[in-house]
Image 1 (cartoon, rainbow, N blue to C red):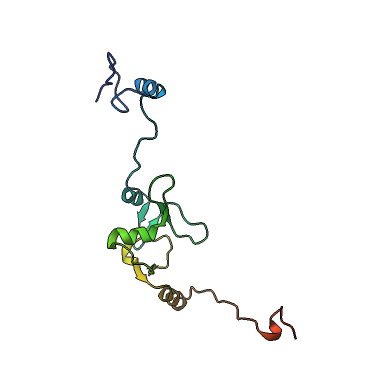
Image 2: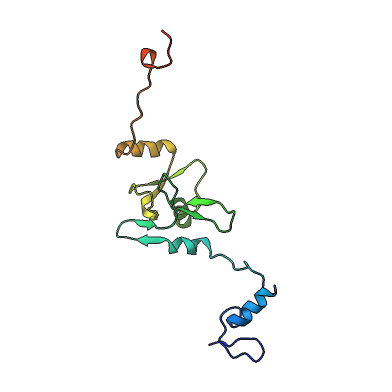
Length: 152
């Protein structure tokens, strides 16, 4: 066990080579800058929030409010948030080309398993949703007398 680096102190070191008392004295005196600890790398923070099941790898971190897709911050206070399944795809397969979406074959928004993720266009994603019965029907367009604002 390490001992405090302050002169004549034999207490165990806990932070920056000093015991808690000496560390706090230095910090209050302004000799130790606060907020200098670096955040963990994004990949490490990503894996802390993934729970692997038999099929899906479920994201347990933050989620977008309505869509249910997981999100992860890229680090720092003003850093952007990215969707967790997109981050997982890029982590395992490389960058996502412009104009393409990351689609789920398992239809689980929180799944980040790269085996369940593939690239596709918006049109392909919509076709996939229609084929799987996930597409919400849009009411028919009202024309003529059926349109509430029409003049007859």
